Every structure is written in C-alpha cells, then in structure tokens.
Image (cartoon, rainbow, N blue to C red; front, top):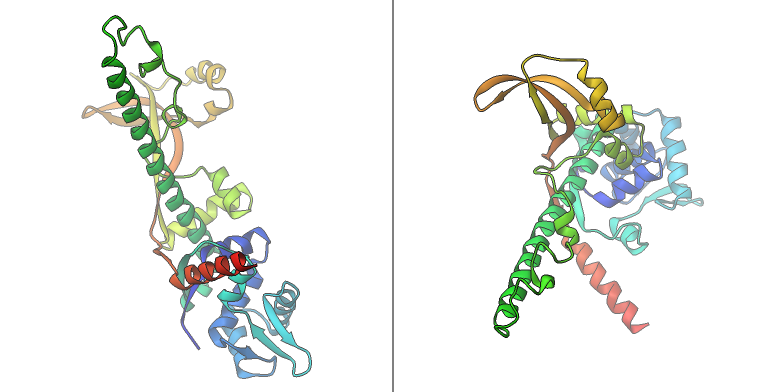
Length: 300
C-alpha cells in the first residue's frame, strides 16, 4: 500500500466536470491499496473501504460505475478489478497537460476541499502566466511602435513624424494587450470559482474558505476606494445605484488609512486575491509519451 500518489491535474478537472467525484475518490483509493488488481473478497478491498470511508455496498456501486466509464477494468471470469494506469488515460486523450499534484493518504478525509484547492490553485497559476505574457506582449508592442517612429524620423525632412499620424503611439490602433485592464493581483470572483468547480455559488464560497483553512491557499480581501467622505452617508447609495446598477451592491463604507490618516471611505468590494500554496510539477514521462504518439501519428 502506497501513501502518496501523483495525480494529473486535468484528470481531477475531468472528474469534477463529469460529476464523478466520489467515484474518483474510490479510484484513487484503489490505486493506493493495490496498484494492479484485487477482488471484492480480498484484504485490499477491505482496506479500500476503510481508506475512503464508504460502506462496502457504496464502494461496489462506485466501482461498477468506474467499470462502465472504463476507468477500471473487470474480469468476469475471476471477478477481479484492474486499476488503469495514468499512461492509459493519456493514451485515450482524457488529459494532455503534464501538470500534476501530490496526493497524500491523509487528504482522503478532506477530499472535496483538496480537489477545490487544486483546481483553484492551478487556474490561478495559469492566470498568473497569462498576465505575464500579456505584459510582455504590451512591452513588445511599445517597442515596435517606437521602432516605427525612429524609422519614420529618418525619412525626408519635408515629412515630419507628427504629420504621419499612423506612426504615433496615441493615434495608432490600440493593441488588444494595451486596451485590456490587467489587475495588480491574481484572483477569481466567487461566481468564477463556482464555474471552475461546477457547483453552486454558495458551495464555491464555502469550499474556498475551507481550502484556506486547510492550508491549500490564501485569500486576501481586496477593496477599491471610490471616494473619501467626512462621515458615512448612506443616502449616496441611491446615486451610485443609478451609475453602477447592480454593481452598487458591492459598495461599502469602510475606514481606511489614506496617506497615513484614518479616513472614512466609500469602497467597492473586489474579488479576493488568491495565493495558491499547493506545489505543482510537470511529469516527464507524460512528455515522452506525447512525443511517442506524435511519431506514431507521422508514420500513419
């Protein structure tokens, strides 16, 4: 019996998408108690029931569902369950990304929270990478415009750079990376988290807080100061309701320090900043399998 597994993150997301989270828990437990095969009368099956915390009948029901999904093989002659390897799932193109996460036996008791922490943390990592690429794209666009300006300035003296409006940064067509407003932190709204976890809004809020308590992530509240006031004026909500519409529900009165002075502020509640604490790694053997499959595709 092994105490640690390396799980592909994309397969976790697939289990959430297909609403087979309990079955996936049984599958991981089966890989821990027996990496090859077992039957319903073996000691490994009893260890599986104890590990996942399900009754014997419930485990058999989830195993039957996994057999229908072809995640687990079953030999009717000897009545044995065969556990599929990660290579099998990769060959069936159930996932293609090499990002993986370490799963400990102790996390079986908090499985739903672990899954939520993994998905949120991995999506935050991808968002962080996308923001960096967007910033690099913006810088390269500015360099391209400046190069165009310098090239045009070396032209004929009768034609000034300012007369050629297409070469000035402020008059050229804005680049998509420039027009997009990138926040100064990484995070998701609760509605976005609900979409990532394929659950309702309330469950997403609870899972995010539980993941923070379990140490899978850190959530930092973020506020945007709309204006400063000498004292709270609750009648101003009606005015801002006309301007912001439904977003006016995010407005709050808060006491903040502005330039070192304690000030009453009308603030907008933004989505939390999320810092993932779960380490992710890229599995090398999946990359080798991908190269092998590409070679087989070329020979076909």
